[in-house]
Image (tube, rainbow over all chains, first blue to last red; front, side, top):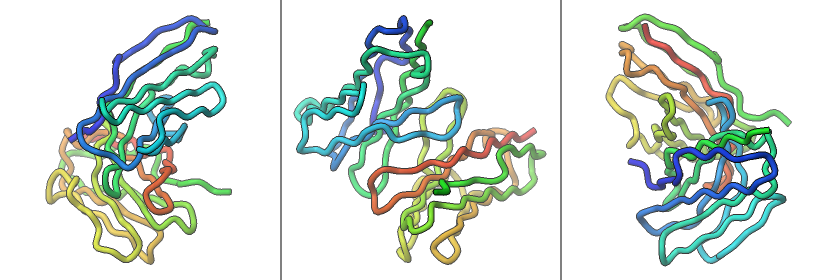
Length: 109
Length: 112
């Protein structure tokens, strides 16, 4: 069964705007990861945040983690057309990752 | 360096036939995962290999599905007597321990 759930399911924004998506999960975790998927094929790892971290940055990406609420958010700043993709959160509670259904982001030029 | 590779990239098969999907992980990665993704859905965990330990097969949907990993490297996912509901993209990933997973491009399986 899926551990994480992303919200919203889909997001459409104008190039240059920020995109925010959220992930909620059910059980305690060791870390939480965000992945991007283009064109329904392989996933690319974006960022990992550990359970004892609250915020992490990587380029235009900002991830927050609130373990008390069992939720995480991914912010993409100054979006570009190339950011159009599906974004998945994945929780690591043991030795395997559990993925949510993803948020589909469309960046309009 | 080489990433995770999968073959074939696309496979069309008739219902009832057996198929084999191959995954070549990144050299040195001890962990290997198989996932299935149906159209517009998230990833469904199928099976996990870690070193020489017994694999975690808890995600395999039926006994028609099996996988092996030879020599701690290449893995083959076998689906026997394929059904139309087996149609999906099958993704393989490898990692060092349980951290960042590196995904292959996937095999798109279509059962007609």
